[in-house]
Amino acid sequence: MLIFAVWNGMQIVRKWDIRSGSELQLGLERKTYLISIIVSNVFGFQLLSFFLFIYTADDLSRLFVGAMCAAGSLNVNSNGYPTLILKIINFLFAGTWLILNYTDNKAYDYPLIKKKYLLLLLITPFILAETTLQAMYFLQLSPNVITSCCGSLFSSEAPGVTSSLAAFPSIQMKIVFYSWVGVTLLSGIFFYRRIGRVGYLFSFLSTAMFFVSIAALISFISLYIYEMPSHHCPFDILQKEYDYVGYVLYALLLTGAVSGMGVGLLMPVRNISSLERVVPPLLRILTVTAMISYALFAMIASYQMIVSNFRLEGY
Image (cartoon, rainbow, N blue to C red; front, side):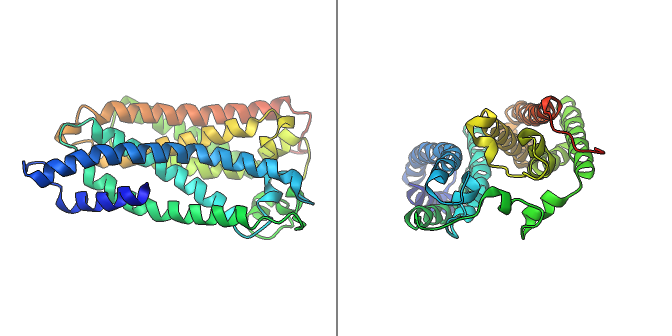
């Protein structure tokens, strides 16, 4: 479906001229309705597929020796974690494209039509790569493989970025996390009250907030949820034993990131004449959505820390 959309999108990028009344232009205008519907549905399913994938990976863990959650089943072969990373990237891409498409459809002259199809050209290779890696991951699953549990993958002794996050001092990460939440919310409030260039700052802060929150989740939030001093796994929180709180937390983070990126995406087009009345209200909606999402994430994480029986000595 995306290949069909991209093929026709390339023609629109090259030959679209809203001022023309030619047969070619009329044909392109009809095609863009079809393509917009196709891509909107594809990207809607793309958003859902992230949660379906991690749910499936978590459920598959019972089939492999050594796996206790999605962390182990994704490690069964070399395609698991690259697929997950691409799904996160494509979730953000898909969300921002849907925002751009919605905005463009609100204007009578479709001023963003070339921009959104150029963005589609950028996104499609990532979707195709994800589809390929996901197929290879499932096709190459072997029940005879002994995989690693999350305790070894997300420990301070493990190689890679996860070990750095697990070993990062808790008090410093708490300061970074709560300070970033505060600055992001303050910039959002200022931008909401007076739309201006600070929107770029808010977009940067809210986008970076996604990564800061993931780091905080691995570094110290997970410890309070599990009530264990060395268990940093970001996947066990998806399970019933922890009331599936992980799905809520990840949904809030992804919503906040997409909304924040959407603000940055729409800032350069807010002065286009046909969008002058469309973009400012949409910017405010996206800003409020991002702020609520991150505020709820911080509140849920703080609640888990307060009610937990676990305490980090000295912190």
